[in-house]
Each structure stands twice: as C-alpha cells, then as structure tokens.
Amino acid sequence: LEGQGIAPNAVCEPFQLFTPEAIEQMRAEIFSEEVIRECQYTSGFIKNMVRGRVLSKSPSELSNACIHVLTMASRAPFTYAAWKSPEVLAKVSAIAGTELIPAIDFDIGNVNISINDAGENSVEHPNVKDMAKKEADTSAVAWHYDSYPFVVVTMLSNCEGMVGGETALRLPDGSSKMVRGPVQGTAVVMQGRYIEHQALKAFGGRERIAMVTSFRAKNPLTKDETVLTG
Image (cartoon, rainbow, N blue to C red; front, side, top):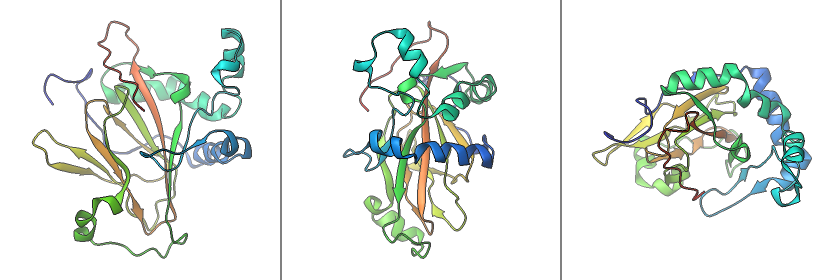
C-alpha cells in the first residue's frame, strides 16, 4: 500500500511475547467478577468484548487528573503494567519500524471473545471450501480498519486442536491473504489503520480470546490519521 502508513512494516508473523504465567494472570483479570459486570460490551460489530478495564471509575466520575492516574490500573494492574513496560514497548517498536506508545489508556488490553456455540471441543472442523463458501459463518470480527495506526493482537486462548483463528488481510488488488493462526501467548503487530482485515472464527477449540492494544507514534510530529469510529 504505497504512500500509506506511518512506518515501513505492515504486519508481522505471530511471535512469542508473553509467558504462560503472564497469560494466566491476564485471563484472571479479564474474567474477574467486577470486570465482567462492569466492562463487558456488545455491538453489531463484535458480539462480546471487554474494554476499559484500566479505569476504576467512568471518566465523568473522575474529578481531576491526579485521581485518574491513581485509579488507572485498579481493575487490571498486571495487564496495564505489561503494556506500559519498556521491554514490551521496545519489542513492539522494533517490529513496527517506528517508536510506538499505547494510544490512550482506555484502549489498553481490549479483549474480543468468541465462544463456540457447541461449548465443547467436538466442534466439527470445516474444510477450506466451506470456510470460503460462507464468510459470515467463519468471521469472528468483520472486515474493518482500525481507529489507530498500529495494533498488537495477542492470543489468550489455548489453540491446541484449533482450526482457523487466522487473520485475513485485504491486498491492494482486492484479494485476501491469510496470516497463519497464532498460539497462546503470541502476538501480531499490524498497521491496522491502513490494512483492511478481519479475524476468522476458530473451529475445533472452545474459544477464541484475543487481546487488542492500540498504539500510536511516540513522535508528535508523525502524521495522525486516527479516526475514532470504534
């Protein structure tokens, strides 16, 4: 996509970013009673998502910036600290090809959740023709562009026995390309503001739980084509 984007690298292969212990702690924060009660949303775009976990109160309830800072990580302290850590930021920036920081704190560690209807690991594996035949049945998240320049998508599910779960990318000629499915603890860095993409459903497994964290350029002079449509 010539002439577009803020960095030379469009998307990477899945790479190991977090340990099993880190993923376990992130999942514990996601499925805590308080988070499920107060941070779970649905829309016509994504049926089940968890977001805004780093805020202990809604922005309207925060009286000043000091309180905002003090309460920021109360619901997901580990997740918040992980995405703010210099080690993670350095790794993400190196892959992107430009120095990145989290876009805004509200969009740290958003989680998209897709659960197989059967509720068991015995879901039939569709063949490739079936998957292409009816896109609506295989799409966990519809075709879209992201609001922010970059996203890091981290797989939180155990992918053993899973078929699908890939990310489909729209190429300049209108065709699509599949990026191989990730495994638990791996992440993909993608310039999602400029690449039309979708997440495919996972078959043969119980769940597809992906954490999405949005990033922007640290340099304030970098062009900003953010569109807050999410």
